Image (tube, rainbow, N blue to C red; front, side, top):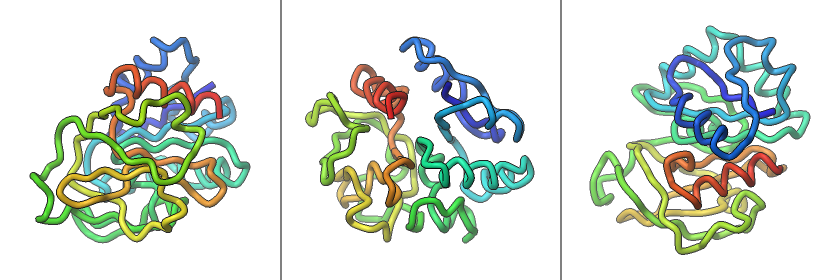
Length: 202
């Protein structure tokens, strides 16, 4: 059972609809007790890092997320959900993230083609991981964001995207059970849905 975390800002319906389409059971997590019923966790996201962390703290999710990670259970952060996995965010002010993947989140630099980054772009795989099994290396994925993961360990970068500058597109923690994806797999057609299938199989 995949839990989809409700912290008041995530695009829950697009993620759960994609999982339903794939025939993957899911449960929206609205309280601490919901973590007892799931084997995988997705943290979706749209909005501001600072407000998202405020909501996560208010709903007492941090201990449950850390316990889930310590057990080696699979966690997937999507877009803002990926950024929240970091140690530090800067939107709209500097604040602590969940701290399950080493790194910092900062606004995309002026060297980018346009900010926010909205649209379809490819990825360059730099380290293999089961999350990309049977995913075409030439595929494009759908992005909507203004911030990027930086200062992440090189060995923890699975893929990068070139958007005037290169930035991490898919990152992992040291054990490999926690994955962050900057684009929206649930909105990225067949190849994105393959990523969600791969996550359910971790």
